[in-house]
Image 1: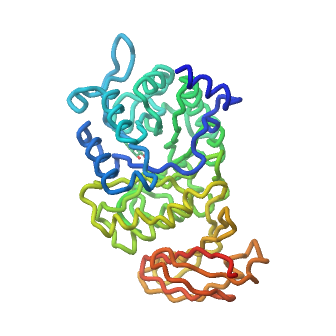
Image 2: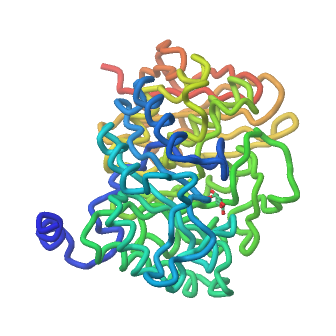
Image 3: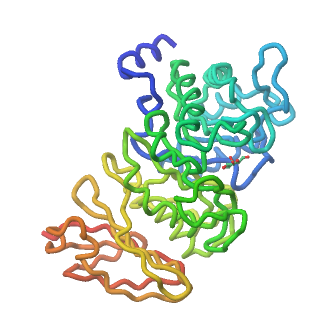
Amino acid sequence: MIYNFLFLVATIPVALAHDNGLGLTPQMGWNSWNKYGCNISANDIISAATSIKEKGLLDLGYEYIVMDDCWALKTRDPVTKQIVPDPSKFPNGIKNLSDSIHDMGFKWGMYSSAGKYTCAGYPGSLDYEEIDATTFASWGVDYLKYDNCYNQGRSGTPSESFKRYEVMSKALNSTGRPIFYSLCQWGEDGPWNWASTIANSWRISGDIYDNFNRYDDRCPCESFQCIGLQGFDCSVMNIIRKALPLSQKARDRDGWNDLDSLEVGNGGMTYDEYVTHFTVWAILKSPLMLGNDVSAMSDQDLSIVSNRDLITINQDRGTQPAYSKWTKNYGDSIIILLSGELSNGDWVVALVNGASQQLTYNISMTDVFIDNRIYAEKRWVARDLWTNETSSVNNFIISNVKPHGTQVWRFSKSS
Ligand code: GAL
């Protein structure tokens, strides 16, 4: 505790979450919600962590184990006012579970809501921020996902939401424990414009579901500009469209656009669709939080989330997400050209095929480097980050992309 205090005094001039020393790169880990929903227990969490470690994913950087909603009893302790873990799910309490997770080499994350209740109806932390932050810190929590349900009308404008989320930011910092602060405001009040001074990341959309492009009335917004009802059951393509204009809002020391946990391994998409999902999340520098049962994962799905080249780009220090250079209508959907500079001067370039038709396209270097025209003249060597094949680039690169697939390269200067 004394060490933590000194650490904070030395490194945090102002007690704001974005200055908690965390979030220099997007967070990586596992979150229980997409696969398990409310069916969680200490045993499920421990076995998830065990599989993640056994499959080598901790070594690749998936370090936060985050338990989502439904861990508590429905009422607070009448005396201490603390949230009480459900003893039928956590017979040895949360501190014991947190210790086990730490002993395995992971960091430990939990969930609450900036509302009266969580989205599943358990006690939320609104107006109990200090008690809950202190409790979380005493349980060894390293990460808080903080939701938006039942916010009692204290939302609808950026400043209302800012104030509501700022209270928890301050409460977390004053515990003296560095706790990654992951906002889940769904993008309804444009958190990319106000959360960077209080948080490490912010969700930009309603909840993902395990589908590539199906329209669902529960996710009515097609754009980030749709304020007020982001909903849930949002497809991968729906979230990608919302994320494209927001690259300019994310960077280290400010925070990250969170496109939601991954669905890879949950069975609802094809290999090529999961490749698109993982590639875009990685190069837009979204958090990479696994959301599946890792013990039951196919080798093919494991190979997707283990792509070291894309993880390296996602975790590249000091660079912004890739930007969309254009979106064009194609077949029954759209195609998107993305590119972005990396810290060593290389570039990442990707062509996303949202359509259900095969795509062959000559990508022009003037498009790739539309904002950096001098680079368009240079000679590049392009390495495909899924096949590892290399090719030289001179004015154009020819791309063949499967339906719903994505081709992505790392461009290095040709010697
Ligand atoms: C939603 C949130 C999901 C999940 C769920 C739990 O609001 O966006 O990611 O946390 O609540 O009830």
